Image 1 (cartoon, helix red, strand yellow):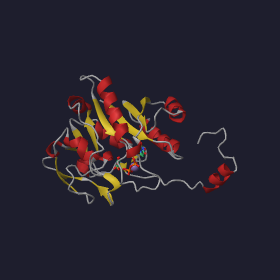
Image 2 (cartoon, protein in one colour; image 1 turned 30 degrees about the horizontal axis):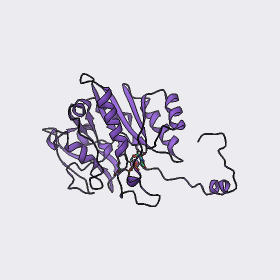
Image 3 (cartoon, protein in one colour; image 1 turned 90 degrees about the vertical axis):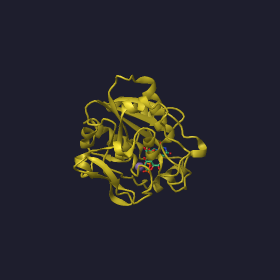
Image 4 (cartoon, rainbow, N blue to C red; image 1 turned 30 degrees about the vertical axis):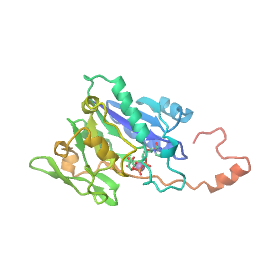
Length: 253
Ligand code: UGA
Ligand code: MN
């Protein structure tokens, strides 16, 4: 199958660094198709050029988050969901451009996480929805499905954050067989759900808990980490900008 990785991304000082780290992991993955969706009204030159030079097979889209759903500069990040508009644009693209005979697996790859190439090998096995542990998320070292080794079924989750969610896992903790997304044409992400319920929203439209396929050695291995990049200190740059100067004249960072 082809692995379709859907990455929402937005302009900020660390954007190119994040995309570079991701792309250089993804270059190691065979049959990989990157769907990069900018949170912007139109595609930017930086991302356009970046993708052209990446060496990856990709689709580049833009889908801006409506202003009333965009996080303010000082809003805590749990206040509004991120990536909804962008992931839905990517799902629409898949549904408009792929055929029922195409074999694929769809994964939501945020631009700040850290991915082992081992994760993508696991995804090749997915019949419906595969799940696995995610490191450094939900207030825990690892958030993971609990697996019955005899039946290889998911029998629970160790989540501590909002454990009553229908599917208490992070966006990085599952991938979906393309066939299910093409069959369930209306399955999308939504702004009308509680914080932290995006994963449950999409999954409950296409799968039951009993059908989940535990991967990564019966959910005993961590191949993805919910890392978050600290915003850089640009205090000196701010001073330069006030004087009408900057360190990055004619140089893309
Ligand atoms: C957690 C989950 O890991 C996300 O998958 C989920 O979307 C998010 O919570 C949520 O509740 O909405 P977190 O690390 O807090 O993640 O989210 P971010 O990494 O800040 O954002 C998720 C994705 O959306 C990233 O790829 C980011 O580049 C993108 N994003 C973020 C935008 O496209 N626009 C924004 O204004 C902010
Ligand atoms: Mn993140």
